[in-house]
Every structure is written in structure tokens, then in C-alpha cells.
Amino acid sequence: MPDTYDRERAVALDAVRSAARLCQTVQADIDSGVMQKEDRTPVTVADFGSQALICKVLQDQFPADPVIAEEDSEALAENHEILDEVVDRVAENVPSANRALTRAWIDHGNAESYSDRFWTLDPIDGTKGFVRGDQYAIALALIVDGRPQVAALACPNLPSRFGTDDPSSIGQAFLAVRGQGAAQVPLDATSRDAPVDVHTSDVADAAEGRFTESFVSSHSSHDMAVQVGNRLGIDDEPLRIDSQAKYAVVARGSAEIYFRLPRPGSTYVEKIWDHAAGSLVVEAAGGTVTDMHGEPLDWTHAPLLSENEGIVATNGRFHEDVLAALHEEMEVSRS
Image (cartoon, rainbow, N blue to C red; front, side):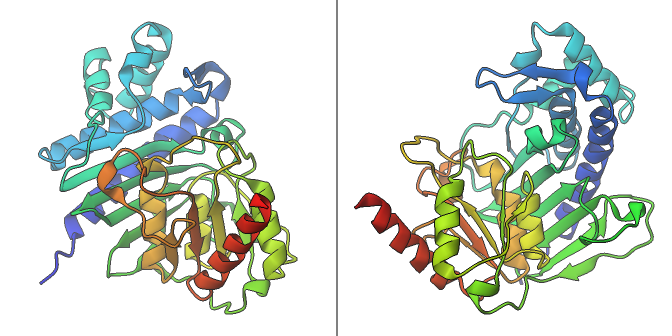
């Protein structure tokens, strides 16, 4: 009988919920918490605080499980002011937090290689959206025997559905267990709303589909996506949002296609924490996720998706049509 992963799913939800609360309090006062990584990606107190909280929970609940996460506390070694703010934020959830413990919790996420069972975490995916006060995600996934099996994807600024004016609908989590479907549940832990099953849309004609893509194109070619959309006959403007929230909107049927295509000449290699949780949510909701050549994503070379090029996620109804249009456009661009 297959593992139902009930405990892992519950722990993951609680972990991303607590991290989301921390992130929302930091986002309200973002200016004081922004620093720069070596690659000049903005990093905030919330990145480190989110990773500390989630890694502490995983260390407590599943001490044998390695965690491959994005952040490293070494970036805080000479930034005592930032470190102290991280500690203060974490202590709002874990009163015992201090500098040493907080750094240790962050660095519990410093596993560097694949194992048969491990967690992968992006404590804030879409940091630029976070800094802008827009969409971002907290993405946690359990990978077992080379496949994501459990996902918890928190989207603190995403409404329960687009078009609603109800402020209480803001803040959603998406949960998935392979073979058991995907669900959406309010991030508010006090909400009495039960999880709602989500499914990709029933749109069967690619021309009637809608893209979702990032605001910025630092790691993905928007131009190629536009050309592929033209080949498919898609007229609608893309839904532009940051982070793995794009996977969430495909999973619940608010969009049908998400591309992450390499820019010409780019040597960037995708990281597993940027895709593990979101891809499982889409697949569990009935969609399809492959690389741009139609190959399944290979998680066994963690922390990199080094055996794959690009990402294509669809509602599953016309995935092959999208891949064919992409390949046609790639041939034209090479000629």
C-alpha cells in the first residue's frame, strides 16, 4: 500500500503557514530589511526568517531528512543588524530563538546533494515580487526516490480566485500528494474553510489557453513565449505574476500554460527549489510538467535541474501541441 504522507502534508502546511505570517509582517516594513547577495538578487529578513522557521520544524519532526534550501546564514555573519532583525522575527514564533540557534536552523537547509529522501525549500520564491509588495511564494516539497511526493506552496498575496473583492480571501496555500490530488486552503490557520480540491482547466484548444509568466525576464525568454503563443493562436494577454504562484494558477485553472524558457546565450541552470513544489501541485491537479524537450524533470542531480532545459507546464489537455509549437519556433530562431 502506498504511503499516504498524511503527517508530512500536515507538518508542511503548518510550516509554510508560520513562515507566511513572518513574511507578511516583514513585507509591511520592507525597506529596513533589504540587502544584496553576490548575484545582486534582493534578499530580505523574510528569506532568512522563513527558512529558519521551516527548517526548525523539519529538524524537529523529521530529523533524519536532509533539507536543500536556498539560503545560507554565512550571508548574515557580518550583518549583525540584519541578523538581529531575523532573530527578532523568528522569536515572535519561537521565543527561544537567538543568534546561534537561528543561524543553525537556517543552515539545517544546507544539504548539498541528492539523497533518496529529502526536502527542498525556497523560503521566498519571487523575492522581487515580495519587495514590490506583490506576489511571492513559500515553496516546500518532499522528494522521495527521485520524485516530488508532497508539496506545500504558500501564496500569501494570492486571492482565493481572481476577481473577488473579498479581502479575507487573500492568502492561499496549495497542497499536493502524488496520486492524491491537489487542494487549495486559506493560509489563515484559524479559518474554518476546508481544503477545496483544485483541477487544471478543461480548455482543450491551445488557442483558447492563457499564458502566465513573470514580470521580469532575467531567467526566462518572454520573446520566445510570445512567438510560441502566436503559433498557437493565443490572443489573450499573459497573466503576469512572480514566483511559483504561476504553478498555482495553472493548477486551479486560472491559466493553462507556463513557460520557463532559457534566454539566448544563457548558461543559467534551474534550481530544484524553484520548481519542485509547484510542479507537483500542477501534476496532482491533472496538469503536465516537462522540460522544453518533453522530458520529465530529473530531481536526482539536486540542487540543480542540470539534466533538463527549460520548463513547460500546461493544463495537460494540449501539452504536446505546445511542445510542437515551441520546437517549430526554436527551429526558426536557429535558421
